[in-house]
Length: 606
Image 1 (cartoon, helix red, strand yellow):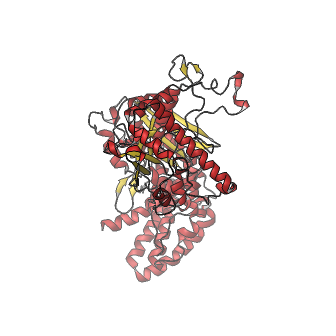
Image 2 (tube, rainbow, N blue to C red):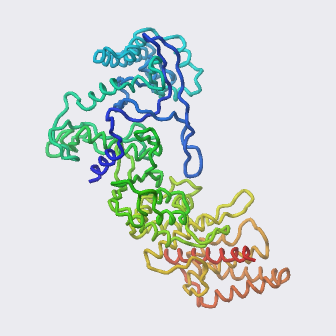
C-alpha cells in the first residue's frame, strides 16, 4: 500500500512526465559553437543554503536544480553519465588531486583512470550521435571531446573558480550549443531526450515479470531498487539508501533471486524513487520548474517524516506544526484554501511515512494512512491540550514542536534526545494516540538537570520551562484524563502541585530579600525538592524565615504578601512526602511554573 501510494503521488504531480530525466543542480555550463568550437565555461548562479532548527546555515550554497538525464547508482567504478557529469569524466581532469582516497593510486594509475573515464563519457556521446546523425548540438559536443582540452578549461579547473577543490570535484558540467540560442542545454534537445528515454524505458537484458506494486504483467523488473537521498542521519547516506535490498544469501528465501525477492517494475521503481526524492527535498522543482510545496519535517537527528495526500488538499496546517505558533495553525485548520475544503472537513486520504537510514538501507519507522480530516482534528485536540500561560506577555497558547525538542535537548543539541523520541511525539499528535512515557521521563529529567538556561549576564530564560510545562499539561490531559489548568489554580490541593508552588514562592522570596545571587534556591535544590521533598523543604523553610526577616526591615508590605502566600500554600500540606513518583514530579513542575508565571503576570498587569 505504501509503495502504491508513492507511485500514485509521482503520477499525480507529473514527476514522471519524462522518466529519463530528474532534477539535479548543474554547477557549470560549457558553451560550444559550430563544429565544437569552445567558447567559455560559465558558472551557474548559486542559491543561499537553508537553515536548521537553530537558525544556523545548513550546508553550502548550491546551484539551482535543472532536469538532466537520470543518473546511475555509480559509486567508485568507472561508469560515465550521459551528457552531464563531473570534471573527471567530461575533461579527464581531477580538480582535487590531494584527496586522501585518491592518494592510494600512483600518478600513472590516476592518469590512466582519468583517461578511461573521459573515453567512457565520449563513447556515450558518440553512441548517441550514431543514433541521431542529424543533431548538430550533439555533433558539436562529440567534436569538442575528440580534441585536446582548451587551455582555458585547464586553467579554470586549476584554481580561479570560487570553489574549494572538493566542491569542484563534485560539481556537474553540462553543455550548451550557442547556435541554438536561449538557455537550452544540449541534453534538453527533444531528439536527445527521446533517445535517452528509450534507453531508460527499454533496458536490455532485464528480467520480465509481474510488478508487485502496479500488478502489471510482463514488464521489465528492477534489480536495484529506489535509493532516495536525504534520509537522515545526513552525511552518512550521500549516495542514497535503498528501501529494499536482496544483497545477502540470507535474504534469498524460498530460492528467490535479487529480482524475485521484491519484483518491482522499472517504471514503478522510478516512480517510488522520484516520489521519495521529491518528498525529502524541500525545494524539488515541479514540471514547470517552480518548487513544489515542502512535504517533509525533520523530527529528530535520526528521522524524517514525509507526508502527502491522494488528491490535492490544503496541508499548510501540517507543515506549520514544526515552526508556527499553534494559534496560527488553528486558523489554518478552519480556513478553506483556494478550491480545497477546510482541513477539519476534508475527507481526502492522507499518508505519512517516517524514515531513518542505518547500515546501508532505509528503515521505515512508521507508515500512516488516514484522512486529512482525522489528522486536522487530532492536531486541533493536541493544540487545546498543550495551551498554557506563556511568558513575556504572549498570553495563553502553545509552542511549535521544534521548541519542544530544543527545550528538552541538552545545550539545544537534538541529537542527544532519546532515540525515536521525535517519531513518537509526532505520531501521538497525528494519530491522537496517548503520548509515550518517554515524554514525561524526558521532561522531568531535563527539569532536574537544568530548569532555566542562563545568559552571560546571569538572566534566566523562562521559555524552555514554559514549553516543557505545555508538553506536561498535554501528557496529563491525554494519558491520565486529569484536568490541568492553563494558569495558576489556587484551589488545587494535590501535594505535588502545592510543593511546586511553595518552591517557586521561596525562590521569589530569596530574590526579593537578596536580589540576584550566583546560585538561587531553584538552581541548587529543584531536583532534590521535586524527588525527595522531606529531605529538602524543612531546610528551605528555615532559610525562608531568614529571608522574611530581612524583607520585613526593607519592604514590610511585600513581606506580608509573601508570608500570607506561603501560609496559604502550606495550609493543606500535612507532611512532606519522603519521595515523589515520576508523575508527581511532573505535577510538581507544573505547579512551580504556574506559581512563578503568576508572579510575573501580576507585575506586567500592575
